[in-house]
Amino acid sequence: MKISIVGCGYVGCVTGVCFSDMGYEVILVDVDPIKVESINKGRPPIYEPGLEDLIRKNRERICATMNLKDAVYDTEITFIAVGTPSNGDGSIDLTYVLRACEEVGDVLKEKEDFSIVIIKSTVFPGTTDNRVRKVLEYTSGKKAGIDFGLGSNPEFLREGNAIHDFLSPDRIVIGAEDSRTADALKVLYSSIDSRIVMTSSRTAEMIKYASNAALATKISFANEIGNLCKTIGIDSRDVFMGVGMDNRISPAFFKTGIGFGGSCFPKDVRALVAGARANGIELNILNAVLKTNEAQPLRLLSLLQKHLPTLEGKAIGVLGLAFKPGTDDIRESRAFSVITGLISSGAKIIAYDPVAMENLKKIFPQITYASSARAVLEADAVLILTEWDEFEDLDYRGKIVIDGRRIEAARQNAAIYEGVCW
Image 1 (tube, rainbow, N blue to C red):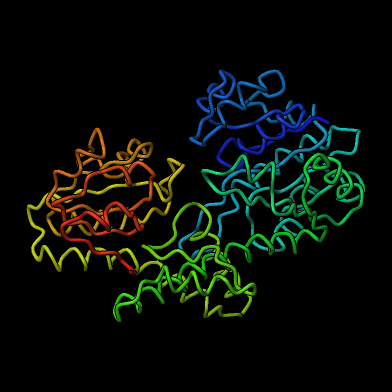
Image 2: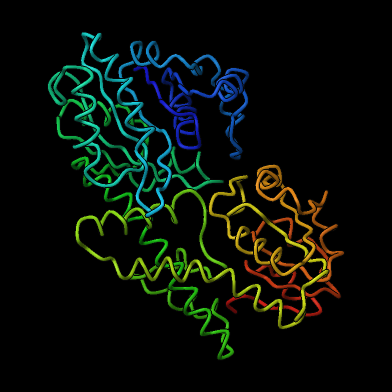
């Protein structure tokens, strides 16, 4: 089975490389010549542990191109994995998805064999069966479910653990209205030992949104309880260890700190809220989840000003810029609001991250970027925003540390230590 994947971003690249490692021939398509050239030279266009090794291992089964027409024409299944950025009201922008579908539909018009189009991009429930279907049918002149297959196959990849998550998933969700498409996807994933959820496209899309919303809710809930725990002198870690022992609840994602970021949770929760509002439903709990998450990083600045009331001219070190360890992704990173607050207070910022500094330089070129984590410790105070393992090896003695991610070495050794929620 030959596969084409439109979009060489995080989801598309990881998906394509993992499919090639499963033995399939894969053609990755992107409009960015730099990404295409990088993949064809055996280098991933994104940072993800283990991804480059897999590309090099499977060079004979994977290639990249800017020619969407030839890629789709020469393959049996096409995955659409382009970006769905947020609009100003939180809803998602389908421009790239629909544009890709128009081009794919033009190719389907010329193909005689039954081909399958699968939406991998995260889209609001009903998008595949409504807007995507209409575009594909209009441009191809054919009928979905009869002349070509159409479905949804959402991804559940954690950045920094994406290869493991693809090849050893908790579940594989397949949404399709016709049996040929559903059966083809079951065959495609047959070598992976995982539970398969067979459902409609719109249900598959909702499973993706509901999953991320549930995890985001656990994080904001943990932070609200953590804020209360700090106020009354309780360690929130002990609280959630006990709470997590309840089999009905589980300990996953009960990690207090400065909140969630990244390309999925903030965007998907906003999109779900906006989509519900467009349908006359107000999601009050998820509105509160977002409000709590946005406020959480600002607690770190408040704690800092307990010890340094005036930040004007002070050197403030920032350890960690990526939204989580194991990635160079700074999308929705909690570092944005923290750094913006420090700049407005007149502080001099010295920042370090093992892999994300080049990305942040494009947004904050005016701050100083350190060559090592140790260099950051020369500042008047240190803020910890990402829990990279190497931060556990630093000597925090004599330092003011405001910790947003529970680094144990800082808690034990800093001269003044403040944890955001504990």
